[in-house]
Structure formats: structure tokens, C-alpha cells
Image (cartoon, rainbow, N blue to C red; front, side, top):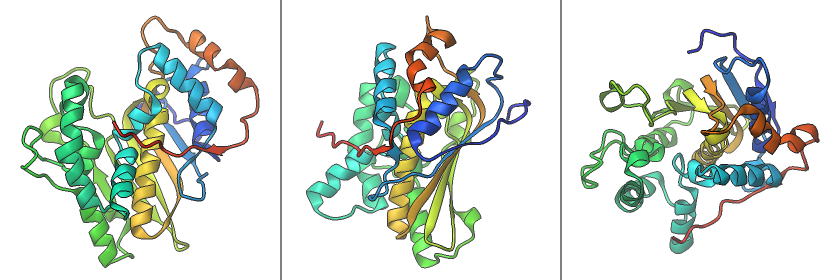
Length: 286
């Protein structure tokens, strides 16, 4: 946790505006990058996916690509693989439960991700930790704990369970507590759920450290997709996504500065955010 005074909460009607305001804040002169940051957004479309502003996401993806960074969709998929789920459900013509999704991801999806990029995925992904916590990454048959499936089963038995029970862990001390001075993974520590008396749920992600430029948008999107999936399974509606970061960093790539990054988004900072628009996840047949 940072020792600096926390910033005021950023609350927006859509994901894109929430990210843009957080990014602008981290780019500001005199900003203490270490001050804790909380971002919250409440806009969701008729199908439950987060409202987004197309021009903001498109611009960010273009700038990320110019710096050889992964786009927002790839980043989001490490938290929740929405394209994999949609592909499975399209083929099976039914909703896929967490146990089945976790098993497919463990056996079919993660081995490919690890082979493609062992540095980034060698210790797992966030979704793998949610559905295979403590599992043997080198042997898919040695199954870990599917926290997501277990939590949903407990909820189905008792939809009035204490809200403190609705937590999912990412960090694994036995694996992650080591002497690496700059660990690559994980940044997300845990997620929690809360519910109200009107059929709504909120999901919150907790980050000790987070890169606002390179990762935050994809993080917000992935947490929102996870929240949508949980809300559907609970037969509730996702009404809010929160992201709490104890020590946010801009995360500018090499040879880049705050000023140059600000120029990439200057016109968006200066104008009012365009009318919100929902962007549905695209199926990835690859």
C-alpha cells in the first residue's frame, strides 16, 4: 500500500471514460504516481457487457500496437476468456458452466498460451488461477481448485451467503512469494463480489500495482467480463465494476514520456466523451 494520500474516486458511466480519466490523471504534472487509485464504472448494455466508447478503445489499441504492447482484448482475456466461452457456447448451443469452462481452458487453451509466450504465461494466467488454483501447470491432468465453480455452487445452495465469502484468490504465496525483484505475474491479487437486495452484483479487483497505460483498460474489461459471467450464473445483473490499486504507475514504454503519451490522446482529453457505445467481444476462431 502506498504511503501517499489516496486520490478521489474516479466514477464514470462507462469503462472507456473511466480509463481515460485515470490515464489523464497519471499523466498530469505533479501527480504522485504512487497515490492509491480507485476506479468505478456502472454502464452496461442490454446483454450485460460494459459500455465503451469506440474511439477511445480504438485509439488506445493503436498506440499500444505502435509500442509493441498487447491490445486491450488480449489483456482482458487473461482474466476472463470471453471469446473461448462464446465459441464453446456457439458450438454447444447452451450455456457453459464454470467447471466445464475451467477444464477446457486448463487442457486446451492454457497449454497453447504457455507455448506461445512462456515468459508471460509460464506461471499461469489470472483465469487459470481462478479455475485451477494450485494445479500442476506442466500436467493438465493434475487438477487444482476451481474456485469459480465452487463459489457458484455455494451461492446456488445459499444465495444469502455472507458477502465476505464471495472472494477469489489469484496470488499463491508458495509460488509467487520469491526473491524476484520485479515479478511479471501476478499483478491482480484477488477479486470479490458483493450483492444488493435488488438483484444486482458488483465485482471488485484489487491490485497492489497496476500499469494504467499498458494494462488498466484490458484489466477493467476482463474484470467486467468475469463479473458478467458470474452475474449470469447467479441469475443477477452486473451493476458496477470497481478496481482498487494501491500503487498505480503510468507504465510508459521505453523511449516514451508522459508528454508524448498525452499528445496521443490530447484531442480526447479536451473534448467531451462521445456517446457511449457497446462493443461486444469478437469470437476468435484461431
